[in-house]
Length: 93
Figure 1 (tube, rainbow, N blue to C red):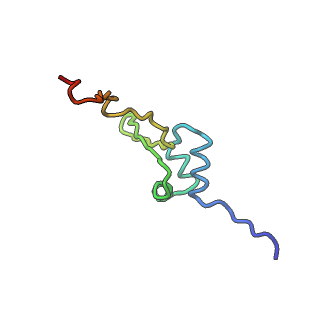
Figure 2 (cartoon, rainbow, N blue to C red; figure 1 turned 135 degrees about the vertical axis):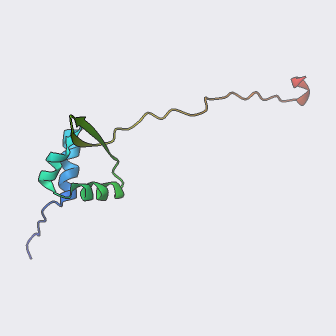
Figure 3 (spheres, rainbow, N blue to C red; figure 1 turned 120 degrees about the vertical axis):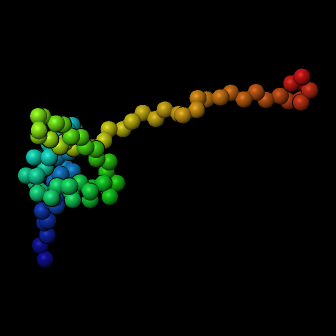
């Protein structure tokens, strides 16, 4: 048999667009790929991709945008604490 080629799924197309853009992509652009783009975004999130969204309001109209979440620098909640250790318990006095 010959090689079987498969078209990209809607999720794969949306993921490729989000990765290529690297910044906010409007819901209107996503709807050109899949009218149920929210379902595709939910499937991407279930697969482990961190997708964030925002809504901007212009007058009475709301516009939705999505992007792959950028990594956040991890800051420890408790600063490093130094512990003093003594060889002999009498040294503490």
